[in-house]
Image (tube, rainbow, N blue to C red; front, side):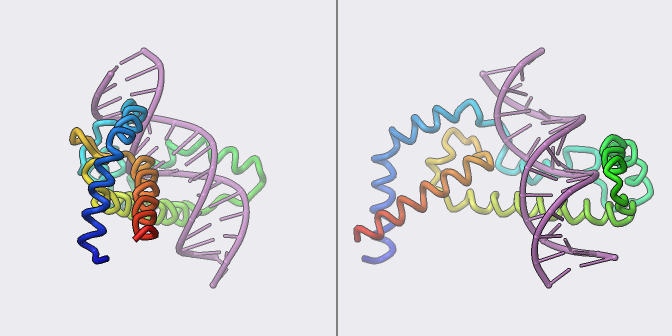
Amino acid sequence: MNLEVVTAQLLSEWKSHESAFGEDRGEDRDSLQSTSPESSLDSLCSSPEMCFSGGSGELEDFSFGFTGRRAASAQRLGKPKMSTKRRMKASEREKMRMRSLAEALHHLRDYLPPDYSRRGQPLTKIQTLKYTIEYINKLSDILSRA
DNA sequence: TAGGCCATCTGGTCCT
DNA sequence: AGGACCAGATGGCCTA
């Protein structure tokens, strides 16, 4: 069985599951938000610090006001507080890490059949993961029966 | 206005 | 010591 046949079979199977899937979507409908397809990436600039590209001095001032409460709890534990420079570097790395994760999820959506994102509403991260699992299971099932 | 989703910051933990 | 990963907290945006 070649790839085209598998794909065709999958799509037809997909259609047959559409009703059940629709219910699933209905269940999730409430959680479908209006984040546009590009929003998860474009919205990287949705908060003040997101558009910061490194201006360390100002960022430092900002994060100081923002993190006071947690720093206090860290000091209470008697642990040596991370240096500001190191903390900023760690924050930057974490930001990049989460962005690459969001990007990967964004990319993953492209591999799901359009049925999964009906009504032009993009999938949330959770939905993307759940539906991907579902999709892979269906593909595996078809292949095992071939 | 409440609730969902998201990006970011942060401290803790593990690993190299 | 420093990087990677994780989970909790927080605030902004959007929709019903």
